[in-house]
Length: 61
Image 1 (cartoon, one colour):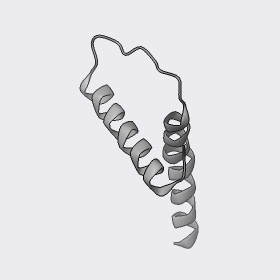
Image 2 (image 1 turned 45 degrees about the vertical axis):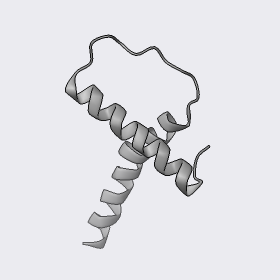
Image 3 (image 1 turned 90 degrees about the vertical axis):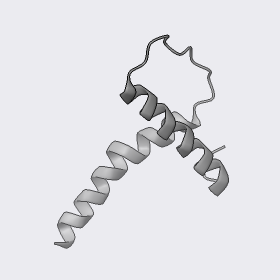
Image 4 (image 1 turned 180 degrees about the vertical axis):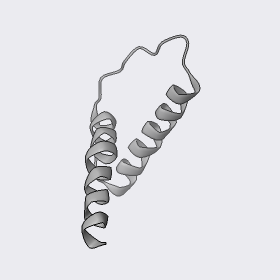
């Protein structure tokens, strides 16, 4: 059971948290496409919230 928990945490860290932190720390302004899907809109909302959370916690600039 412990091995399964550790594996799940590592998977979340590698596949979710690291990409979000990497995207949140980029400072370059990117041009948004004119047409976005619902999934894109949700991704951008999560991205913006992660950036705000990281700034609040002092994790990322």
